[in-house]
Amino acid sequence: MTRTARRNLATAQEIADYCGVPLGTVYQWSSRGGGPRLIKVGRHLRARWDDIEQWLDQHQTGGAAA
Image (cartoon, rainbow, N blue to C red):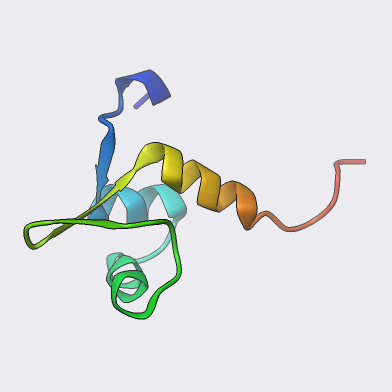
């Protein structure tokens, strides 16, 4: 799915898939803190794609490519 085709809010499963973590990790982020900024919509977790990208950018490791 291309960036422009994505909805504004990602589901918990989409967050897990995109970040390469188990779904349970996303729920742990919600209850314990950590991860991208999450939004509760009723009983469902969502995140803005921009917030996910920003969080990933802030947690990059390593230096510049040689």
